[in-house]
Each structure stands twice: as C-alpha cells, then as structure tokens.
Image 1 (cartoon, protein in one colour):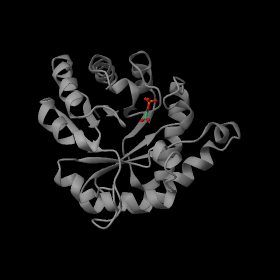
Image 2 (cartoon, protein in one colour; image 1 turned 120 degrees about the vertical axis):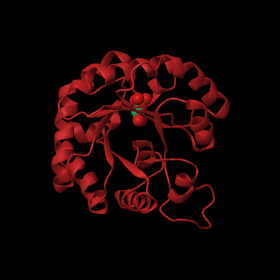
Image 3 (cartoon, rainbow, N blue to C red; image 1 turned 90 degrees about the horizontal axis):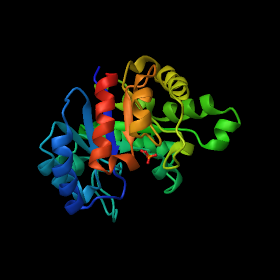
Image 4 (cartoon, rainbow, N blue to C red; image 1 turned 180 degrees about the vertical axis):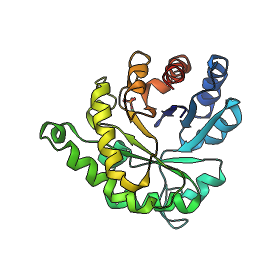
Length: 243
Ligand code: PGA
C-alpha cells in the first residue's frame, strides 16, 4: 500500500502563502507513489485545491458535528465537502488539549464526517505523564474505543497516532515506539480491519524514512515540517522509498 504523507498546516499559510507553497512544491514532486494529503486552514482550502496541480487530496482540520446552526465560527462536514474537502482531521491533540475537546465530541464529529462522506483521520495519543505512568495502552484503547463504534461498516478512514509529547517539540518517538503504539491502535480497532495508521510528532526529512519503514506505520502526519515545500517534498520522497 502507498504510504500516506499528510501535511497539517494548522493556523499557517493563508491563500497567498498557499499559492506560493504549491508553485515551489509542484516541481519538487517527482514520485507519485505516495498518497499526498494537505490539511490547510479552511480559508486556504479552495486556493490549495486550485493551485496544487499535483496529485493530492485535501481536507479540513476540524468540523462541528451539526450540519448547520447558530454556531458562530464553526463549519460543518457538509460545507467542507461542498468546498472540495475529501478528508477531515478529528481530535487532533491541539483540539483535545487546547480547546478541551472530549472523547464524546470526537465521536460525534466522526459520525458527522461519515454522514457527509468525508474520510475521518482521527488522532489519538498519550501525554508524557500518561506514558511515564505506564498508561499508554489504556489511553489509546480508551481513545479508540470512544469512536470505533461510529466507524462500523465505513469504507475508508485513518487513525493518526501522535504522542502529545512529540508534537512540535522536536522529540520524536522511535520507530519501535511508533510500531508498539500502532499495534495497540490496530488491536483496539479490532474487526474494523486494516485502516492506515499514521505517525505524527516532529516528523522531519531525517527521521521520516525510518518511521515509515517501521512495522504497522502506514504514513506520517506532519505539522511544522509540512510548511516548507522543499522540506515536505523530501518527506514525500522518503515515503516513496519506504512504500
Ligand atoms: P509537528 O506536528 O510535526 O509539528 O510535531 C504534528 C501534528 O501536530 O500533526
């Protein structure tokens, strides 16, 4: 299976920077044996879709679970789909830990994504204290267990394992750490089968190949290193080599 190399731009790259990104990224993509995915900010989604002119899928970084309503500042799965998104990140650690999103809310968002026909990319991951307390297994099973029921019979979804202590810190899980956690995620998914499980947390050109060659690692979700077209292209190349 082709490795997934996904960029989560977070709150970076407005429409102007998005166009500039793709004009530099496009000539760098030599190998189409990876599945490229971009999660730009909502305001840059249509610019990304129009200016990419490279084989890639696009998604949004968050949705509300309602289809419409008096919910200032929110967007729905239906709107994201209409605007050209194919995927949606759900339960990213910043949503969980900065904005207080709960397991129950993550599950409602997964249900909304499925109803609208978006591919959910659901993020899970333990905090440093939880890892130190030997609670990796328990935390991942609780997080996966909260939404797994909403994915029964769903043709396509992904899970991203992102240890909170590795996000934006320069600390990366070893390929062995990633394999162990991905094994737990797969086990917790049980009958849901072999959905791609991505690793995220300080992925860089220097560690991407080793991570993507590790057992049970089907790709990467890249934050900081996805913002620079040359750097992200090198990660995509690493994915092509590991696929
Ligand atoms: P990072 O972020 O690559 O900057 O650590 C990963 C993520 O939050 O998805």
